[in-house]
Image 1 (cartoon, one colour):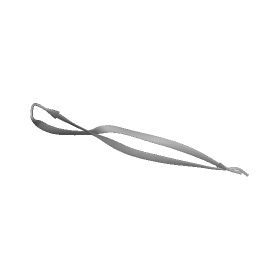
Image 2 (cartoon, one colour):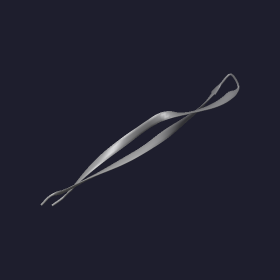
Image 3 (cartoon, helix red, strand yellow):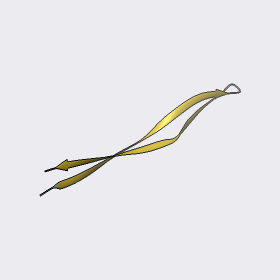
Image 4 (spheres, one colour):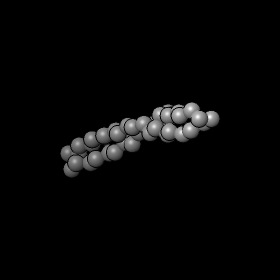
Length: 40
């Protein structure tokens, strides 16, 4: 009997930068990491 468990870790990254004396923050960089764990 093998039990499969899939865990997904999602997160967003913020990239702050200056553009013409205006501080902007872009948090559109998102990614998900799927981890499969096999339990025998």
